[in-house]
Image 1 (cartoon, rainbow, N blue to C red):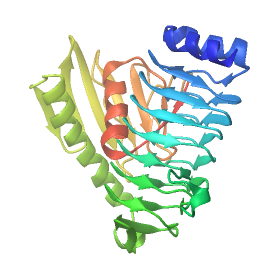
Image 2: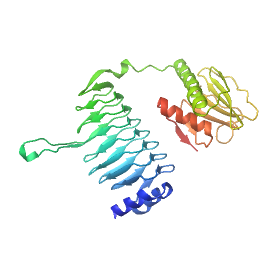
Image 3: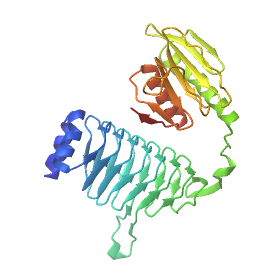
Image 4: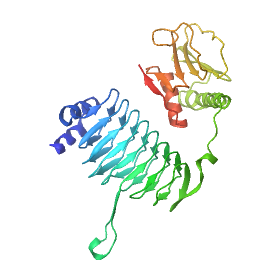
Length: 327
């Protein structure tokens, strides 16, 4: 039965995949969760959190449990298999062309990532154990805020502590303590995370978000969307997209000024000021005709507006900034 269901899910269109898993596998699938074309999931228990995504052309076949937390993503061309399970926390990412052997449980905490072409093994053997060769079976655990960059190889039994970074093409054979930056083959701690992590004051955050806006202008508006006429000044972008005027404004940490609306414009606020609210709020807490990224609570409204979505995706893709989507 599981094999038949796996095949049906594989060939079904995305909207039908989650229904099949609910009906025939008892899967718990939250609103907004999705499974892409030519992808399939099979496991003892299946749980997808809100806005979780399994992208196209990914195969997940486990005998244990599969859990993908809210706003977590497993990218395309991945193979995940084994006699145990994969348990992934919220806001995580597994990059394309990765391979995860889960003959023992593989666990990821919250806000953690495996880069493209990473490999995780929980079972290592080929040469005959009864002739004196070795065999190793043990789970792999990534803590919270762990980033394994592209091409990382994790051996059975490895545990990577919270707030750690593993550099590209590292081969991790031993567990890593929390707060570490590691690289090499075999991977070794080269310095503590606190040495490279900046302390983010409100003033520095203002400068950071201003920089993000300018890069959004350069990369998305000009390069990807071909919008060449952009009125740019510190903390603000104004432009025309598909015959509609857009204004993106940064509300700085010390900025209590009331914004002057632009007639007919779609306004997008980035709010870094405690207590600041758009004027003329509607029932959703937004100014009529405005959308807002709350940079203090890391929330933004779910929206189909193309520029709002492009900015959200840009901050996620290039800066790792994730927002909780509200209705």
